Length: 270
Image (cartoon, rainbow, N blue to C red; front, side, top):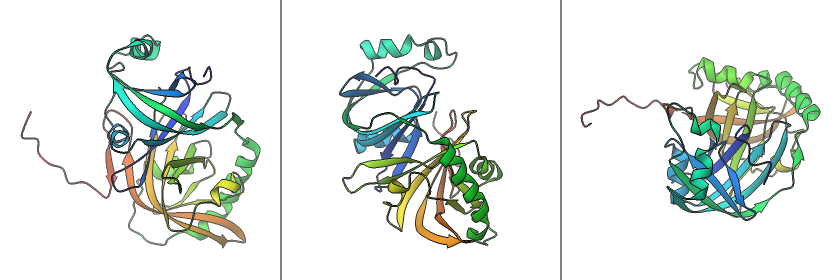
């Protein structure tokens, strides 16, 4: 519970959209109100807040500044716009002194399961990232029409950016796995070496629809969803690939779908 307290942490929440597909959001306000209850402080309206009320099954991942991670599953139960947790959030300097917004709603989740803390294995991750960089050229689609824009492709190819994959498990809950070694083979496909977190990554069946969240330490992020194609040998190395189908900008203040492009519509009611 103490590790969940700081606002200065990576907090991810995986939800399920109406089509039954995974969605990942950066929600650093996730905290533990009690040993069996989590809270999320809402300051802007994104897709995850809609999805969590339609399907309460969620997964979460916390990474602290010393690179320790906790993961687990939780079920959304209710929300409140006042109370001790609401006051606690708005007393945090990040929200209390924010010029533009504070926490306006607190979401409550019942804790279903949680892991012990685990140190992020940086040496194996760096090795896996180098293997991915060597092999990804052989995983290109060779299709000229781009999906990822220049910014998004560069974000995924930064070796120091953080990436995480989510899919829906057999129990109907999302599962989040660190995938920091993941990189863009080209603008239409992601590739990764499964040599780290291999026991979990190899549990994802081929042709599973997955979400991958990319995040820089400057808090720039992008979310893709695509089809996991399984593992193949590329340049003598085993590589997993994900064909990109959907791209979403989850950065405030302007959340929105990037690909497929959404037609602009004039505003006629104010």
